[in-house]
Amino acid sequence: MVGITHAQNKTPDMKKILIEAKPGPIAVNIANTALIVVDMENDFGSKGGMFDKAGVNISMIQKVVPTTARVLEAARKAGIKIIYLKMGYHEDLSDVGKEGSKNRFSHLNIMHVGDTMIAPDGSESRILIRDSWGTEIVPELRPQPEDIVIYKTRYSGFYQTDLDSILKKLKITYLIVTGCTTSVCVESTVRDAMFRDYSAIVLEDCTAEPIGYDLPKSNHEASILVIQSVLGWVSNSGEFIKAIKAKTSQKPGE
Image (tube, rainbow, N blue to C red):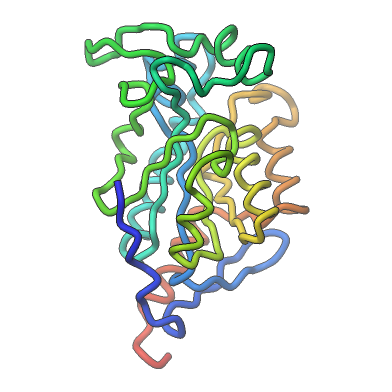
């Protein structure tokens, strides 16, 4: 999907919003902002997907779907570009990593990438393989024609993808980040974004993490603390939507 003309054509002075966040409020220009949706695909967040079949608790991922849907709606109305990142490999697994690499070992031996399965809709699918049921975005968050969808083969959305070049072409400075899982693909993408001088604002109630979910202090909480301390900012769906509504309700010149 393409559509690299959108928010940057808005008048910059009319598009500044202030988002309450930690460690402090951050002023962003909508014209230079993109919303990133990380790995909200069936294999991670739907019944019958890879996580669910492996016995992983996906309730926390499913819980953030409605809040993420509201954020997407507000972002689209404000003219913010939406970019979806999807973990997905080629059918021949040529991009899963070389022999002996951690990525290859984990994905083939633990996650069983490439294994054939029957999807809930009755179709034949393969775990985390491109253009199959498992790598489709969950129905409630389905991309629109004007959105951008990028496949990735590592945890970070920047690794060997066109994400950086697309963001530069769009003149993006600020990233509103949502998705799963918080301590792996979300944090990896935010970390790489910081290295490239993007300002990332993670919406805490639009991110989720199964690892450590039942522990007194979860991996999700640890990643949120790291992000707000050194990698970016942390806010939530309510503050983001409130900031958008406050701006869109203003009259020109205010």
